[in-house]
Amino acid sequence: MRDMSADPESTDHRRRPRRRGEALVAAILEATIAELEDHGYAALTMEKVAERAKASKASLYRRWPTRAELVLDAAYSIAPRPEIVPDGGSLREDLLYVLRRTAVTLSGPAGEALRGLMAEILPDPERTREVRAHTQGLGRQTMGEVVQRAVERGEIEPAAVRPRRLDVGQALLRNHFLFHHEPIQDAMIVEIVDTVLLPLFRSVPEEGGAGT
Image (cartoon, rainbow, N blue to C red):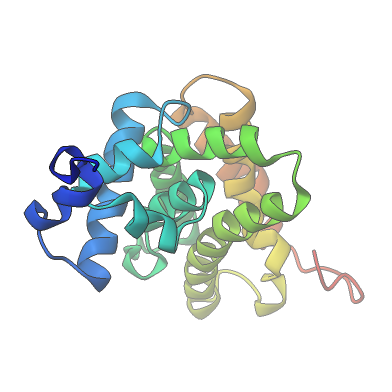
């Protein structure tokens, strides 16, 4: 008969903290971020995350069938939330704040996750769309918050606020980050705000250009 006492999967659950629900999920996501910081996406495994989180592998696989799905949720968990963007008093200051915060986020474990995910899932159009939906969702909400403030201040016209326009600034940063292995410089952020975003939001599209 096999000695069950020597099998970590059969015994560790008695020594692990009995966490469930949100507490367990939080511990697993924190462990995933720590693994990304210490070892990068390529070396991250479900086993290492489970060990670091002091959780069973089964608890990971029940929630995240693949490493990519786990890492995507972990990166999403540390992404800046749109509701905590301070009011800088002008559209320009708010845009600079958002893009600078995006650059900081990309320089950390969330950026490492994004690079690894894109390399892994690009051959799969459906999974690529899922990642884009995650990355665009919060970014679009955040930009929507700051441009709505600008509308209320009278800086821009309501008609200038279009969904695709809300994606432009952060899309430019992500593109630079993914294809140029170098930090995003502040001069680039200022240039995007002053030469791309401000002219874009200060212009009102012609009728029929609903998506732009």
